[in-house]
Length: 394
Length: 218
Image (cartoon, rainbow over all chains, first blue to last red; front, side, top):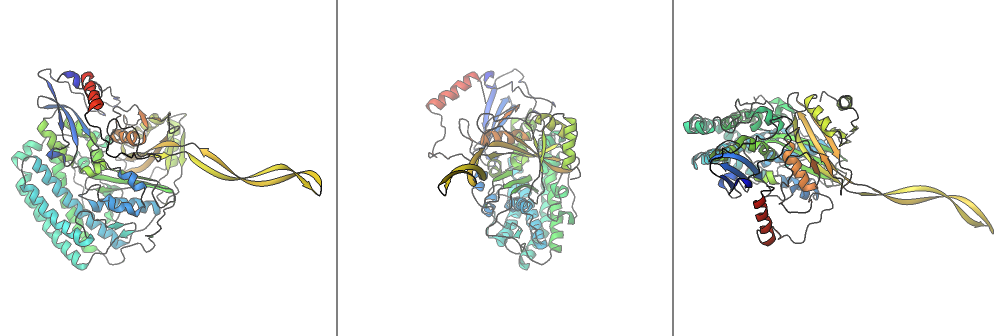
């Protein structure tokens, strides 16, 4: 393979200098190697390809290739009624169906101006924070799996995740495809027994985090492989629209729960963990600390949850037709900013239905993070982004 | 949002002379009004919005298709009609209601949702339109200003067919290379043959080989 294969002159607009990934020149020794990592690579969490150009072990170009799981979710939703898309949002990020439901419900509520009863808000917070805990736990488990800690940490994470999924199953009838929230509330009420079970699960969570901390956080191998690898600068992170734990690991204090005050998040006391260096280790630590903060929110919410209705009494289930207009609603999903942009033309179907997928947009800076790193670290950097392909390709 | 849309509009107008900025009211309870920019000044305006107004975070960029609309209107028309009244021919003014059809030309639209991380403001909604849906479909790319638009503009190009001038890497994002149509357009018709997928045979193989030899493209 010759140099000619590598597209060395991308002829990019560079108004800022750091707006584009730097062009790395090969050192001139040996041959360049093009590797297609994926679509069936164990580290890609699904079907995803990275076209990597290697100079020895060093990555000098990386282009992500998407679309293997594309089913045009947005087009399908434009042909269905508003409510009919609710179960389909579960399939976006299939780890976090509760937060997907919430983001969509929030956008529709903004479009129609519906109010959500207090009890439903509490249930939403509880389910969303449980989702965050199990998502971060499995994200950390997968990251360690890719680091070579084959199986054990992931199974520890999945043990906690199963407890939370059991709660979801008891509540909604399904472990992962919950289809639980509705415009103006939730589908079914939680029982006292469920709340007790949830309290029990939440009481066990700090032990799990301590355990992971004790075994892994100061582990020598993890520190050697994660610290200083895959650094993302805060300026680039903001400019590239990175969101969620990725953005905060770069030291940018931007948590939509704190910024937008959606739902009832301003009632709870919790802090926003921030990273210093923006490397893989910071992303790992931010996720660990976010789990601890989520536990705090869960404890408060489970203590304070009031009685009352769970649906807006004025909410219309049949013949749901929002007035013409548009709305963009967003929440802090475990993976980042999940937004829904809806345009209504007064018919039962949305005229435009758009998902702002955090997983896809967090990959914008993947090339910048990986350039100049070893190919073995690409797997780790990619794993630290924490994506789900169902949301990337939609 | 502490900065009102009117204030943003007037700030833009004073900073970028000649920029066409139109404030459009959103009738929905969400109250997210938007600014419609003209394509010629959009890049300048966006630079100003980022650097001076501080909207450093582009959250969402997406397309909307507005096809040609046929509008049926009832118009009252007065015309002179020759009538025979009592055996005498007379010219009488008569008002008739007629249904007339006119076609409103369609266009493609890009929507940007901007936020400010530093000032915690937003959303500021900017919209750009193409001239029509067939041949004049170029719009300036905002990727050089907000990198976040890179994949999203590629997606809009892929699914709506809007060509972003100045985009550093405008390729299809989700559909495969060689796919012809733009599936998110309202008038897109799905093909009968769902089995088709490009495989490395015959002409596809020849094209791939040619590309590898010249080193062109991705």
